[in-house]
Every structure is written in structure tokens, then in C-alpha cells.
Length: 340
Image (cartoon, rainbow, N blue to C red; front, top):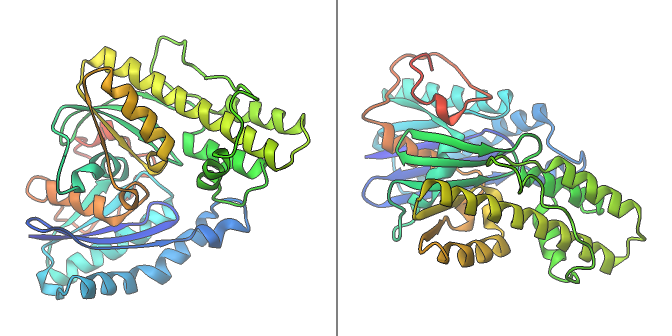
């Protein structure tokens, strides 16, 4: 049993093939980051056009890399949401077209569910249900209770900017080109601790929601009030990163206390941050619990996580019609909606 995964929710084109026995046998990713850098952010129309130019050749490349023929693919899983409408339509359209021509099922997958399940792609040390998931990326920051496949409850989420979005915006304020979140973290390594102290937003609230817009504004004001040389840039980067990470740690700690779960899954693009992983690992030991993370190439948007979820759903969630539907704001809690 093999599933071809197609991920085109935003600006990265991800194509992968997941084999039920062998795991991921091919994983191709094309990033548009440099293409959008001159605009300071993602231009939706250009992102969808780039997907169109890349997706077909990447599917052929993935098949060649796995040494497979077309008739050896048993199903196609594609990201149906959430994401940018134009980008989603590219993956959905080609997924349905190929499924129709190959006479195999086409399975819509929730992008966020893909991220949550990404650590399952590891051959060893897979998390068992139930677990708490911290999904932290450029578009989302969520704490999710995961009881089983498709059984999700959102415990808290960002009410404004996602953590990854805040990273990129502050990086730009510091003169770092888009996407600058990862570069900001590298610069922070040279920062002097406690020169600047940033707030930890909503950590005293009685809920598990996040808010990073105010933190971004605080960073902007700090930048405007100082002469930005290399050392000051590093010091501000460190203070900002510390504030984001400590906020995530406090919220996860509160969520673990509330749920009593003994497993925490860290997923999404920001989960590749080394300092976040290190500090989360220290915190989780105090709960006598386990931390699970995907390898870096499975943290950012990729087709492997989509193919894997497709494999999980192939028996119970096969869509037989050819309707082209995308759900730009598809919530994890709506996965069981019969109208989708």
C-alpha cells in the first residue's frame, strides 16, 4: 500500500510517497522563500503560479526516486486546508485529476493534522495516544488534545499573530530579509542575556490562548529607541526569542497540568528551533513525561506528513466523487463534519 502526498497549502511545494511497510520512500520539497523575499512576504497569486510550474515535475521526480511506476500508487492524499485558496486549488486539482486517471482514491487531508502526525514518520520512538500537541508555525500556534486519529480538541490558540509570523516580522524590523525567523535565531546566539527584557504575553491569563502581536510591537518600539549596531541587533533578537520560547513553555506547562498527559508532541516549522527543543526537553522531565519531535525536514510544510495521514484515512475516509473543494479555514475540530 502506497500513498502519494501533495502539499501546496502556502508557498512550499511538497511531494512524497509513503509506503505502509517501508515508511517514507520519497520526499521532495521546493521552497519559494527566496522568490518571495523581495516582496517581504508571500504573494498568494505568485505562490499558486509557482506551484503550477513545479508540482507535476516533482511528482515524476518522486516516483523516479522511489523507483515506482504510476500503477504502483494506491491512493493520493492532498492538502485541502487550511491555507491560501489559490495554492490549495493547485494541489486539489492535480490530486483529483491523477486519482481519476489512475482510478484510485483521492483523500483530502487537514494541513494541521499533518503537522500533528509528523513525529509518527519517525521509524522509532513514535508517540502513543493520548498526547498534548503544541503546533507552532508561521500561520498557527495551537495547543491540541489528541486522543486518537481524528479526535482533536483545541485547548488554546493564538488570537492574533502566530509565533512563526511574529518571528518573521521582527526579523524584518531588524533588517533581515524574508523569511527571517531562522536567521533571527542564529543572530540571537551572539546576544547578551538580560540587556533587554521583553514581556511574556498572556502567561498570567486563566486560559491557554496565545498573543504575539503586542510582543511584536514591543520589539518594534525597542528597535526604534536604540541605535542598531550588530551587538544590539543580536541582543534584541535574543530577548525576543526568549520571550516567545518562555511563553510557549509556560503555556505547555499549564496544559500538561490541566490534562494530566504524559506525552508532548512539538510540531510545525518553529519546532525546528534548537533552543525551543532544548528548553522544552528540560521542562518535560519535571513532569516525568516524554517529548516527541519530528526531524527538521518534517517540521516545515512537506508532502510526507500529508501522505501519512492519507494512509491512516484510506480505509475510512475515501472520497469517491470528483468535487473540487478547498477549506482555507478548515479547523481540526471540523474533521468529522459530514459536509466536508
